[in-house]
Image 1 (tube, helix red, strand yellow):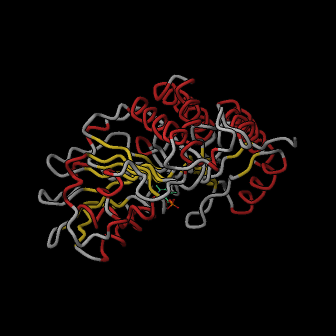
Image 2 (cartoon, rainbow, N blue to C red):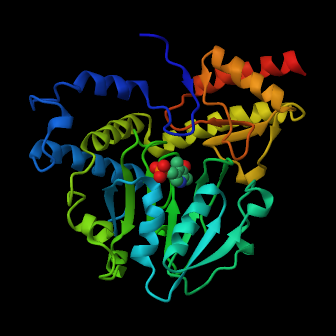
Image 3 (cartoon, rainbow, N blue to C red):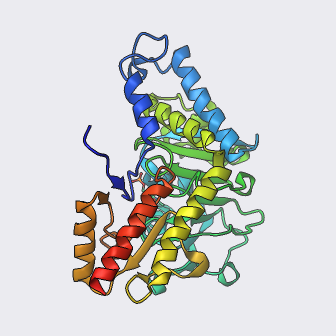
Length: 362
Ligand SMILES: *Cc1c(COP(=O)(O)O)cnc(C)c1O
């Protein structure tokens, strides 16, 4: 096998090598089934065991209370931008959004298609370089829900704590930081996350929804787009992405083996400390774009003194096996995505590269 690279891509992101190797070994023949997971009937017992195992691990690792149900959907986080307002906002109601990046803006746009949206806070005026202080938010106490994006994959900001919303259900797009640290699921009405950053390969969206909210959707919601349909049918209303759900189960086994979310939290803190440490040690060369408590532990963004140096940094990095360094086209600069599967050793090797590059080019 050719050498694997240090993959700092923003999504789909790196997967643990152990998981890929296990999946590879089992591709033609899974357990005693005599076939591949990809060939199993989604209505049969063998697949049911995979489906149940994945859900049980999500419940265990995230501490999902019995008030909440896990469902698997397709269409990415992007479909959730549309499903949340369809299912949760009744005619005449308004929904609150906190706009902290490109993905929250897209969520707002979908929210505006068929009803009212109120932007409770936005950091767009500051190019999304921070999470607005909760004390400054203009919350509507009658909102159908309040929507946040817990980690902003593009600009590299992250909520370090979650807001108090009283009786207003809190809805969060956690696509790029789910499973990266411990959270209190009971605080949320609904959490959604596309798999391809921290959960597994692309193709499935995990939705965790408080069961009483399933009743909100009216008869105008198409059956296939109603959370209730999928909750009632245990995500088997139509054929789920069976192999992707199996892969998520393997990733969850791996997370559990590393100490669950407490283990992930420590690992991600260590990685972020290494990266921000290297940036802050040399602030003239590595110019952090995000400050203090808004800094993301998943996507670390910074600039170099010139675009020419950034281009060379990316090129030279790529030659020695560091890929996915280029910032999103909307913001430029450098972005290092350090999702769960990225090990501290990869980050340490990269920090050495950063220091060498700086000393040659200062
Ligand atoms: C990647 C990402 C999305 C988009 O996910 P799709 O699966 O492409 O729809 C949405 N929100 C956040 C926070 C993301 O990181």
